[in-house]
Each structure stands twice: as C-alpha cells, then as structure tokens.
View (tube, rainbow, N blue to C red):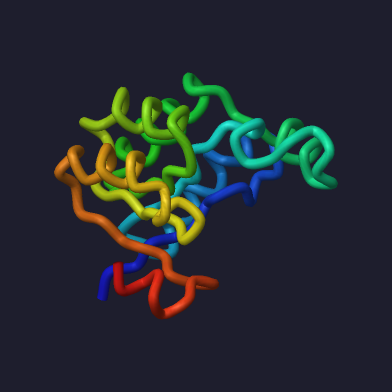
Length: 138
C-alpha cells in the first residue's frame, strides 16, 4: 500500500506548521506528502468571498521549495497539485524533488496547462470529482 498524506493548506498560513505536519506524516508511516501549488489570485478574484483567506494563507515559491526539500530530507516522496501557471513554474523549479503531480478536476479542462504538466514526465494522478462523464472521457 502506498499512502500519500495530504498537507494541502492544513497549516492555514502558519509557515512553521507545515514542517510539523510533514514530520507527523512521516512518523505515521506515510510514503509521501502532497502539497498544493497555486497563487491566490489565480484561484479567485477579489470579489470572491474566500479571496482574502487564499491571500492570507498563501506561501511564496521559496517557502514551498522549503516544504518540498524538507519532506525529501525525511525520505518522503513528494506529490503536488498544480492549479495554475504559477504553481507549474514552482513545480518545474523543484522538479528534482518532486515524485508526482496531481491534476485537480478544475485544471483538467485547461488543456495548455495539462500538456505542460504531462511534459514533466512524472507520474500523474487526475482528480475527476465534480466532472461530468463526457468531460472525463476526453
């Protein structure tokens, strides 16, 4: 069995808590951790009710690199969700420390970004929650 511990945004913007979460995942026997790479202004517009939450809990590219490298230093595989071009660039710059990519359902219909992700030549998970059958068949 291969277990991926979803870190996502569980630390709610508290930078140091990400390291604690990764350490706990490793201690529980997880094989991997998964982070979400996105920029708040690509997920929503300022008029969206959750925009300020996304902005307040945002981690920079440098911070995300530190999470990835820390997880690798503990012997964990690293997976990332890529939500946008910014997240793709952060993943590309950390490619030597990333073992796999998850394409979220909302991204699966962005064919340009999906092609870029596929060009990374890493194992891929594809989220399909919320998609219609004909969208999944594409």
